[in-house]
Image (tube, rainbow, N blue to C red; front, side, top):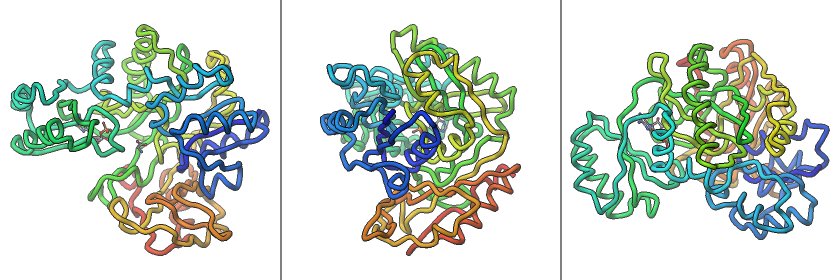
Length: 424
Ligand code: AMP
Ligand code: GLY
């Protein structure tokens, strides 16, 4: 069978590598892909929101399943587009339809969903410019720090955490009245600040049955010691040592089961991944957010730990018999460290030649922002590649990743030297 993966990051390279190991797959296509996916699949240079171009690609290449990496095409309704098209309606899409994608596409919707279905989460209210003064009043009932979230997609930048009430009020006004994050912030969710340690749990569901995938911890800030600007993610570790069996059981009972049951009850036929951002506060889980896709770079540690055939799991999602599929995870630890362009997440340069990749032997390099130019691998984004390694311990896996990184170089290459150190 031929499969198309949509996206161009380390996440999609990890999907491609894992799927390429399935003997049920004939040819893999990635759109638009990167220099890493180019080695194991055929890259197709189309825009992810150009659904007609996706259709053409699918029909021309006899593709029989589409795996959607990022949230934007899901929120824009790519799954609904397939179901409404005579030629595409029988081709399964791994990723929710518009109604399910709202769990990420609208923070207000996802908070309402959690409240309705009894999923533990921070107390909240939503505001627009019409009830701004009530928003100020709600802020006055909360203790600092204040958490303001743009309702819509804002490329990971829509959450503000502010220490002073004055600042919070001013930012709220900027968001709803002056479109600080465009249309995305015309509605703002204000919520209580959650204490604890953050981690992510990933679920694959066919709408009725689910598999809980390995948990992971992501490192979001650009600099060591979790300082500096927020990024898409600078590294990840799986499993998460503080997510022990007792905690993960609570996550399954209090979060995963009511989420799946809630989707069913609300008539949302959800086929795909649910990324649950959690706070662990003294052993009790509370949901920070849902995403309707896998995380990046979390995928680069979660998928390598899955020993089962990923295609078989996707087949279970498509045929709604995920419960019949075998699912095995290695107990080994996986770590990944992101190599980023100097300057990222602010302005940075592209087109830097990347050398030394052929000398990496004890890690897997997942490409993110890379392309091939004149037969050379060059950088093409802020997050350039993720270096993943296995070990019996976090230390052992990290030592391998850092030894591998020492062999790779490009102009102004930057990375965090302390991924996972807080867990050792
Ligand atoms: P989100 O886009 O919802 O994941 O928010 C971005 C980041 O802000 C999260 O990863 C958390 O670190 C932080 N955050 C969001 N909501 C809260 C909250 N209610 N309490 C504490 N931290 C939060
Ligand atoms: N690494 C966080 C995300 O994928 O949203």
